[in-house]
Length: 239
Ligand code: TMP
Ligand code: ASP
View 1: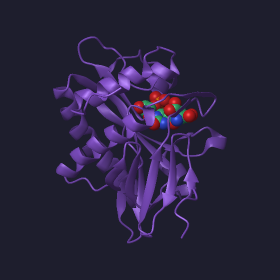
View 2: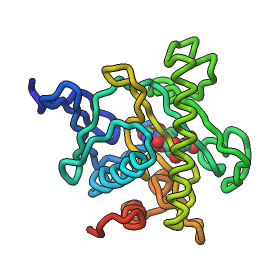
View 3: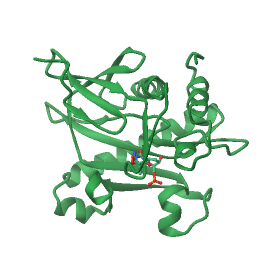
View 4: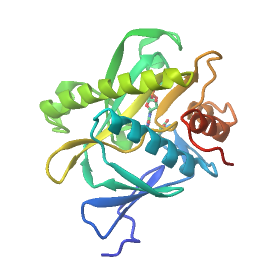
């Protein structure tokens, strides 16, 4: 097995095989993209921060019994994960109106939602990751109704866990995106990453955006925001 040949390359990560067929090595890249790759930049240090932040979130979820693919970090920018077959859906949970919800339904940014809103998007760059309803998912056989139900349930559980934890760190969890996969024994596992690339975090008092919206909206100090998140989660301070 050539463990140096990339199995899959996404916008922010690369996946490599390891000598264990059930385990993959993830390399977090410094590349930042937005708007389906139209906007691009290299942000030195982003990969390391997301690797460490994801690890902290996955460890928190372990404490709460949520099953996921993360095994351990093996360097500043690499981690080992269980091999899963990714379900081609992005599950978004929203607590406060922002981003595409504002554009779709016209609520002002910052509106508190009375209940968390769960959405499914088809992971398909050519189509621009369209919003899917349950019938679309069944029509395209992207996941079984049972899997869709479990993904919704786990995503809401993750929302409760993260929201409570982040509240204690002075952060609002505005929304976030999860991905799921099925392991070799058919178990549904939370996969991918949980980081400022895939979540919106706002400071509780100032409302300051501390996530990838700083890049998407050209707000500046992107890395400083990621560093701030890492430190608030208890990570070590480094440049
Ligand atoms: P949206 O408001 O642009 O739909 O994004 C909702 C959440 O999902 C937000 O926290 C950012 C995250 N997200 C991703 O992780 N990847 C993506 O490709 C998109 C569009 C959003
Ligand atoms: N990750 C997506 C992209 O590059 C979109 C985003 O996060 O806004 O294009």
